[in-house]
Image (cartoon, rainbow, N blue to C red; front, side):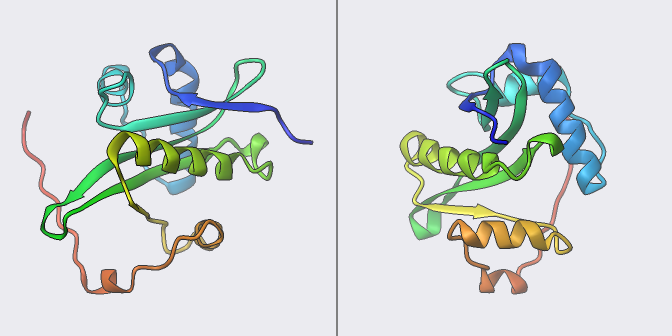
Length: 157
């Protein structure tokens, strides 16, 4: 059975359902859920939000999944890229091409909103299903990344 959906930008009123999707992706990855309502509204809601977030909504208003990402500027290369940070479809909506539709929509949105011509996405090394899915959508493994070490630093706000 295929569920009828529409893809749209996330709204502040989506928080209760969206939080359930965040909890789902955190469980799947073994992460801790830390996103608050205030952070959600600041980062994901509105035209000028730094994180572009789209949701898949069923005809009865249920959020079936989401995709989120942000613009990245590789200044020294003169490129505008878009990093797709999260893609998640609730378990009972999987295998209906919702993830594919979300991905195609965020790529189109980022091309128009940010002028992005290159898209990046990562997958945990154990998630072969995700890697194969992204390859089917035309993503290629970055052979340069094996020599890159990513470092982080936290500072007080």
